[in-house]
Amino acid sequence: MILLSTLNAKYIHASFGLRYLAANMGDLTEQTRMLEFDINQRPLEIAEKMLAAAPALIGLGVYVWNARQTLELVRLLKQIAPAIPIVLGGPEVSYETGSQEICALADAVITGEADLKFAEICRLLLAGTPLPQKVIAADLPELAELRSPYPLYGAEDLAHRLVYVEASRGCPFRCEFCLSSREIPVRQFPIEPFLAEMDSLFQRGARQFKFVDRTFNLHLETTLRILDFFWQRYEPGLFLHFEIVPDRLPEPLRKALAKFPPGALQLEAGVQTFNAEAAALIERRQNYDRLEENLRHLREHTHAHLHADLIAGLPGESYESFADGFDRLLALRPHEIQVGILKRLRGTSLSRHTERWGMVYSQEPPYEILCNGLIDFATMQRVRRFAKYWEHVANSGNFRQTVERLWAARGSSPFHAFMEFTDWAFEKLQRTDSIGLSTWARLLLDYLSHRCGEEPESVRAGLQNDFENAGRTELPPFLRGETSPRTKTSQRLSKRQQRHLAPGE
Image (cartoon, rainbow, N blue to C red; front, top):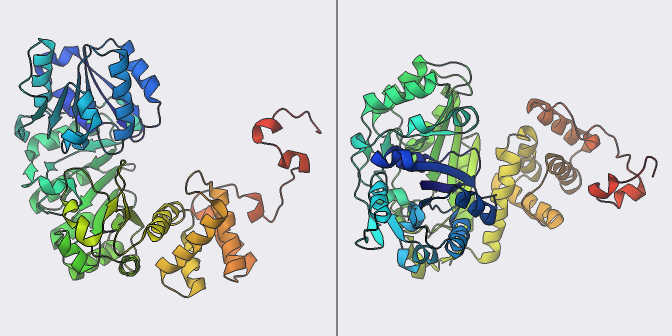
């Protein structure tokens, strides 16, 4: 039996790559089984479940989000069952293979798009035929020849997980931080078979479609065909996610997007930087005037949920330049701004800037920048915390009114005002994760009341409105003006200890 497996970032993420491989196994299809895990599961327990399936060969998808855990898993498998061949594939092992321990441990590594090559390698290994070499480059497959992965989304996937789909592969741009810059030209799947597959998914109950195309709005005719397909089938609950080129929004596309009601569309716009010099350094091309006009149009004339990306740490961009870019983007009113920290992904050409700009990256996945010649380590850490706290407070939608009071109260730029809150909150929390909603609400109340001099009852009323607007029926006691009834004894005890107290203790 051939076991195909990977560690997803979360349970909700069904592996698209595994389904492509399984769909294209040909005469080995009946011998192939998929097992999906996530990075929160222990590698030792994953190894146990994999080996319980008695595989004759194991194929593993390796990505930046699971590289560390997959290395530990492969170490275990080679200790416990060294005779079972392990074949690796995926972006993380498609480049710089010679320096990676995981590649040295494996029996074969397929670089590039392995949709068809994996089955070929399996046939050789299972027959005992020596491979021509350990690291094997896969030729780009003809997309029209690939068997569809979509029938391999099961009922549980359709009901509880994201359904990933793609109408194209590749990207026309050469942004040096992105692996897609190596995938030129863009290749399109034949549109009629693709729409037939989408119809089949829809008839089976799929209502959430996440397109992984890097530039969904690149080919207008195809884009309009896909949008019209879903518009003709629209019903409440339909959700479509697309990544768009933000400076490309012709009038026919504007009209097509405007048809969809609230909740149906999410558009991810990769702005990345407003610093033209930094953009030129990394070979990112975009028209900023057109970009701004398009984002305003999307906010004012469509119901699409607008998610915009910025990257901190790019060569040539200072802390102040990034702050200015953040404020410029916020003024366009996207629903969410994702602050990403620059990563030097394997296979990208970012390393050519290392010496000139003093770029220092972590050697551990996801290879985020630690500092550069313009932003020192301590400042980069502050930006990293800013990104985390912005996600919790602003992007979450839990504090839509209150978050704007942060910069209104300080009378400064939104970036600097929120950074001031970030520094203050981190001094109290000393962490960036596992922070509950009520903790954030109390922090905002304390900060605005005591640090900014806002009237406490006004802040509390605003927080109450935020909770109600977010659909939350129960307020924390301190927002109702109540105090906790816990006794001094219970305050000293953990929740686990409190459960053992007798009534009245």
